[in-house]
Length: 229
Length: 209
Length: 97
Image 1 (spheres, rainbow over the protein chains, first blue to last red):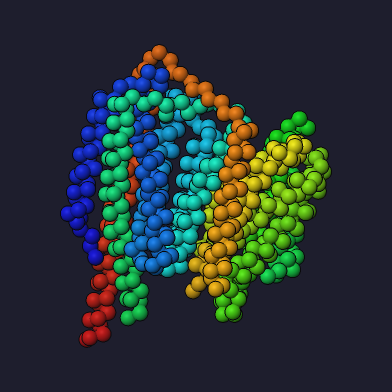
Image 2: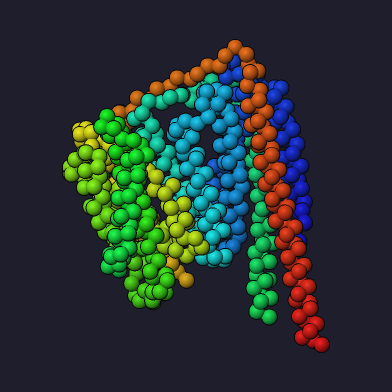
């Protein structure tokens, strides 16, 4: 019942902490300052890798959701829920760092560019997922509801992206997204390392959240047994 | 399936609310004749969305409160048929609401919306809207605070259809040629087909006990 | 038999949807005229240091808040389990005695 840290989880924690220090070196000392965008371009490494991990997490929500509807195993539902929660944490931070990067480089906090709009909608869908899980009855029914949203939401993302692209190109684009072009090799290395570090952090948080979720479920069943006694 | 159409007081209330939203939005965007083509489609679809969300909230509420859904599940009706029935009921409701709202909109914003292309757009968008909405209505009705959960759940999902509807009906109101509208109409058809198939399949997982 | 029919129908609908989507994409892409104008920054490369600071602080504060939330949940859960166990123990004693 009491969730002690398993050895694997400790290894993950150590790995993600160590790689994070390495990443800070790469981001601040190794990679050169961008000539056009100045020092604020260094936000990019965290921003992009958190975006990547966010999508990665929502992919695991999809896997867990499909797995649950198929096999009805609680493990799969736990995977979907835990990934959704951590994915929302990552996308929230991704949106905030994105806003903080847009202001110095574009002069505005926000623009309804397809990528930005889709990220915001993505975030809204998975916030709704967490709300749905919180408001629906525990157990099988809530898990089924979540699984459906997890699947529909994931496959809806490309459609949303396309429709926003078409919608935006009708109006003139205020600012471009020129920053992604020509990355210097050092920058690419830093970005790769950063993505790996955040993926490790995701893995650590996921194992943590999974075991907590398992304890929660055990507690729920204990309580329902106790109320029957 | 058509109980909500018979519940006249509710329909009237929702319609009154949607007309009210049209009027308030008119003040909010301070529409002048020059701006009308820009803001009118947005205003129209916001009020349609309001009416649709209110209608869909009620789609399963009556069955849920009376416990009729369990009764329906015992009968040999297939789950897909149940979904299609619910979807058609909501579609009928929303089309009635739109039939009332469109003339009001035409008068208030001084446009002529009764063109075949615009009517087609309205029909396709409404179909996509309710096919997603009926699935999530069945989900939301089983949660606490269902009135908030329904729009939270399905408005982001239905966003492509809303974008398509706003842009395409804007084009239609401006009198742009069909070739400009066709792409958006195709997008809506795609969305409708996928939504119908997927939601009908997923519905089985929603209502099983 | 019926299942195969349904499956074929679904496959056909999805297929036609994909074909339509591709067609719509090319139709709309022709209308599209993207304008890309990247704004270049002023001469001082360190002018935006506060933004950099803010972005990295927010990130770490975010993760620490989440980690704190997880540990609080864990602690609360453990407390509740203890309470439950005590309540059960008491009930058993009363039942036995």
